[in-house]
Amino acid sequence: MKNDNMKNQYRINEQIRVREVRIVGEDGSTVVPTRQALDMARDQGVDLVEISPNANPPVCRLIDYSKFLYQQKKRQKEMKAKQVKVEVKEIRFGPQTDEHDYQFKLKHAKEFLEEGNKVRAYVFFRGRSILFKEQGEVLLLRFANDLEEYGKVEHMPSLEGKKMFLYLAPKKAGVAKKSQQARDREASIAEAKEAEKQQAGQATPSNGGLFANAKISADALKKLTESED
Image (spheres, rainbow, N blue to C red):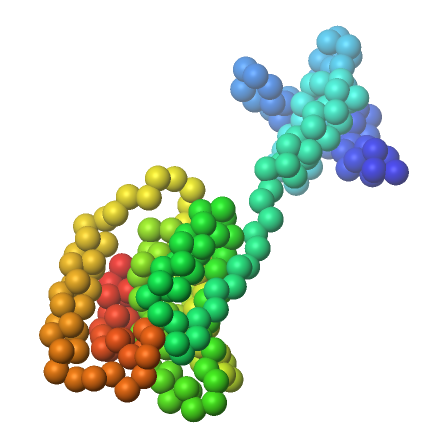
């Protein structure tokens, strides 16, 4: 049935009833009357196969029709084999996510993106922890920044019910190379973290985990992550 469907996709020989056609081959292309193209096919012992009927004039090839169908089937199989199924991998953070857990999940996110998958990271707020949604946004922006060499932000952090989501898509395959903007951004973040440590020495955090240490403002990190755009 599939072979019959493919055969019906193309017109050949006397089925081609336009005034002239463009013949394409290894030596280039040329426009000739359809009758002349049919004579050329007959002299070479092949078929006149219309491969682009919507072109003006229609594009044809001089080739054995069975061989042409075989080439088309082979090309379709190769294209199907090259298609990569993109999956969406989830990374979950909680209000008490500590640095060790953060680095562990960051490592997995890098692997997911390198494999060509998308990443959906989210912070889940339980009960009164929703009061710390600003810190959740900071955490996700830090996550996006740490992954900038591997993925690009598709959707900035947004709160949906008790979850704040961040969506990342993989960058094109290749060796990750830091741009000058990336190096400048890392330097800015390092300075901000140094200032954070100095302030942390004068105050005791009221909540454990990453949220207790997230002193960098969400607006500041947004500017850093958006500067690349």
